[in-house]
Length: 208
Image (tube, rainbow, N blue to C red; front, side, top):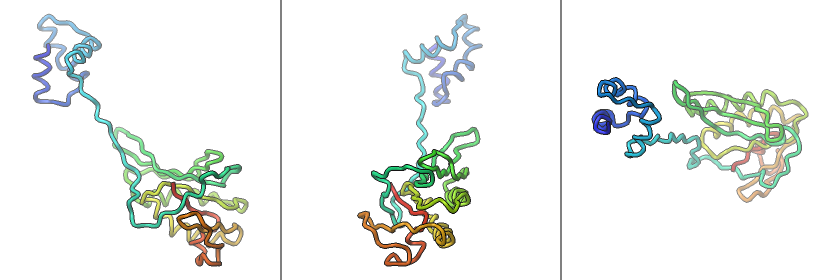
């Protein structure tokens, strides 16, 4: 039995136990050996012939980029209402067609998914589409909203969208403070912070 397994593994080193059992079943019956799948797996395990499953590692965050990194503004923050903090991230799902990446924008208080995008790649446009969907749901009562995300490069594409949306919404959304790397305020929109988009009126950004 072990010789048969090693013979097959010589040509197919990564073949699993289930396929081995099906492949060798008829040959074993011809030799008068009848063995179920569980007993076959026990035999492989006893002889250290089981194949270890390779862990598929997917990287969705690359933080060693040249873009600006925003401070963590939600550390110690008490979240008490919807649309106070949005949390953005990228996760993944393995399918029979390959790996799909899911860009999500979720409300931290209600856990509601405000925006999403699904794609077979990590292109920045997917993050933009998720954020755009979330921003379309903004109403005039949202108040100040922080967008908390990882420091990965795909979400850096949000700058242009936030600048456009923030300036458009600045008439009825209060400006959020801009902070430096130490969390110190740099002034309100139109003040020392300069551009309205840089001050992140209504939609401030914060990194982990």
